[in-house]
Every structure is written in structure tokens, then in C-alpha cells.
Length: 207
Image (tube, rainbow, N blue to C red; front, side, top):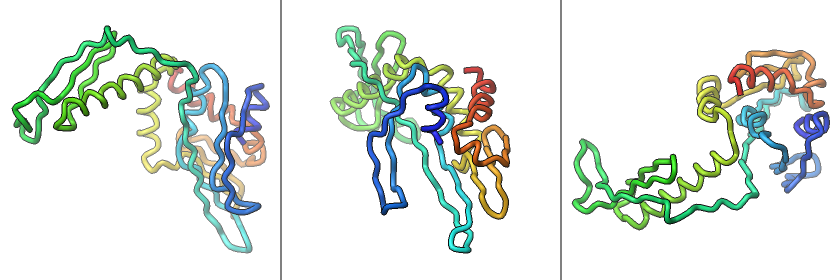
């Protein structure tokens, strides 16, 4: 479905890895799609896709998990001299200090502020704070428009994580729970015609 969507939109898709259970069943498929701002389209596809069909005269339900990995091939350079570190005390329940030594870390880098106080070791907290900094810089560099808005939309509309159902039995119907759009033309959707689902979500979020 996604491969055919890419073909229709002249977007490159490369299969990275295929893990098969047997000749007819797949455990997982990993593929890479390369296009500017492609994440804003596919981020909304993240979640559980439910398939209901008739198999060997029995009703069968399958769940397929779609996950999105933000891949950035560009090397991220952090200017160490511009990182401002501040040690702080880690706090436990009731506002009491876990220890008298300042083991927590607060760092500031350009317009990014991070606080990490999980561990009783300043070195470990500093290490994890820098990891969070790296992730935030990647997020900013990838220009993910209204990322927080998209994430909030996913959480509200997708509490059970099933974002779409593909029903082949006892009738033909696709139900998209994020957009509330239904379609009886399953073949058309599986052939890559995802335009109405994707456009609705993008217009709704204004991304």
C-alpha cells in the first residue's frame, strides 16, 4: 500500500530488510522513504492497523504495527563550548532532596533547555541530558512542522492505538479512526490511494 502510494507520487522507496515467517507470511518489513518533509505524511500512519478477513471459512483478525523512524543522514555537530551546564539537586517525593550533593543537571544550548535528575550520579545525568539534547537538535533540524500538535492529535484520536480497520468480511469497508473517513473501496486504498486520509489529517492540523 505504501509502496504504491510512493510510486503514484514519484517518491523513492527502498526495501532495507524483510523478515519472513514462511513463504506467505511476513514478520516485519523495513523500508526507507526519501523526500523532504515526508515525515509529516507518514507520522500520522503510525499505530496499529487491523485486518478482518475470512480465512479457511473462519473469521480471522490480524494486527499490523506501523512504526515510523526518523532517519537523518546528516551529521549533527554540537558546539561544546556553547553548552551551559548547571548542577541542581535531585528531588524525591514530597519535595525532599534525595541527597545533599547536586547530582542533577540543567543544560542550555542555544534555545534548548534540558533538565535531568533521574540518577544519583552527576556524570550519568549529564550523559543522558546530552542524549536528550542531541535528539531535540535532530527534531529541530528535520523541520517537523507542528510536531507537538501532531503528537497531541495522535494521543487524543488514538487512545486504543488502532488507527484504521480493513474489513474484508462480512462486508468490505475501511474505517479510519483518526479522520472518521470510511471507504467501501478497499482495493483502491490498498493500491496506494491514501490521499483523502493524509490530506484530511494535514489540513486538520494545518501542517
